[in-house]
Image 1 (cartoon, rainbow, N blue to C red):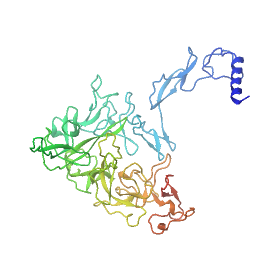
Image 2: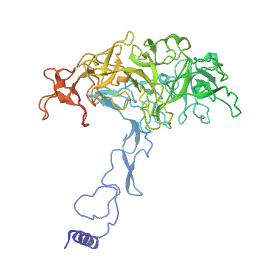
Image 3: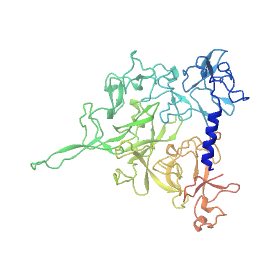
Image 4: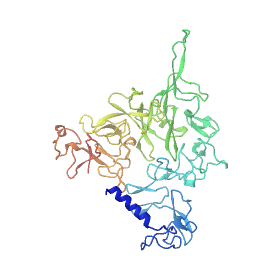
Length: 507
């Protein structure tokens, strides 16, 4: 008899001989017999967060599904249940903020939105939540301009001074207040355009980037050629993409110049269930020149001196006391060449790379991603491993891919990244793992992502193919290249198993 026939025969035998279960029970069986006699409902006891449904003889959620993602149903008495806050502990210490729901590098941390999950500081949209935003330091912070808000939030999470929580992307509910379930963001209150920052327009919901309004797209004027009758067509408007220069307009949408001095840049908005998203807008020039200090999040009318000039973007690579200090760097189109867009413009000079500064994808098929030009380098090449200053800011070669898709390159190629104002020493904890936000370590080092219980430290890079013991032997280039091997007591360990990758970490 075959194995399949034996299985079928056994199944038929059990079905024929076993009596039906007389009364299905929500509790567990006592294990003495296959089909016990009828017993009281839920006699096997329910879980600590469940109650017994005596009618249907099953255990059910004690809080009847009322708890949101930030609370847990727990028994408070013999018959009562309540939704209690989930407390996260890291290294034995309870996290003080309800929005800090994870441990990163052994420290309490909040989590930003991911795949429809709300920012843990903001809280679920339809339920009461704090209304804050997960900041870069893992702590819940006050929402800034253009970030989602709740008018009913705690005072420490209300919009900044002179701003108000307004329904920019939809209507509010019946009480006319930005509350749970409404999509509102912080905007500056205004009576007219003079109350707004340069490049903004006053609307019924506050100051907003001009690029959101019809007729204010980034554009230039070009020669229209000739008409069908042979006459000149004159100048025609041509829309341009981010990274390009654009003509400034007055409040009526009319061009105010013939030579473009504006820069087509991103206006960032933030929603708690999807993160940052952008609108292209023509930003007027400020007073800061190439490689001069700027403020990446300067929203003040009087802050023009710290805003970048024509064709420049404020790259937030320096950090500083308030975390928003940057350098003005030349704009470019960071979209990789493709069949559809074989030659993205504007480009960088020879020996430079266009860095996808905000690590974005061209989801709208605009044909452009806003980037900045940075010197190309290679941590293994003696002639290219050292970087010159950007103005007064020192820079180091970081082996990272300029397209933003991989944090550590496979062959040591990278870009010269300005160092942050505070730089850690080799083997010491570092504060910024994203090199596009500034180099947090010294030359030939990287600040790798934190582990669950281990904080990131400045780690020296090495060439895995230069380590002794390989079957292929040690390449001759290892004798002359920089950062080839590790100091005594350290081993060169691979970062990835990708074929051909030779960048490792000294550990």
